[in-house]
Structure formats: structure tokens, C-alpha cells
Image 1 (cartoon, one colour):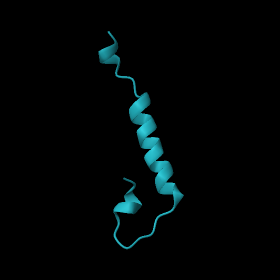
Image 2: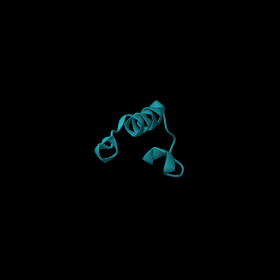
Image 3: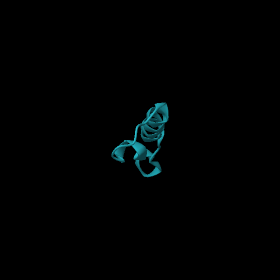
Image 4: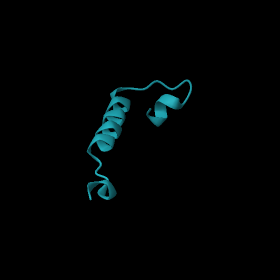
Length: 37
């Protein structure tokens, strides 16, 4: 969840969605070198 969404009383816009998308893509595309070999 984006930091601005966690802040109470603060409205958020599409930047929070982009932050979440970036987090998901990083998690999906991260390669763990130790598990390759």
C-alpha cells in the first residue's frame, strides 16, 4: 500500500496505483540468483 494511503485524512490519486503496480512488478521480476543454481 502506498505511503499516502496509509496517512489518515489524506486523499490519494492515481499515483498510489502506480506505486502499487511498481511494487508488484518488482516482486514478480526480481530474480533470486541463489535459487537459479
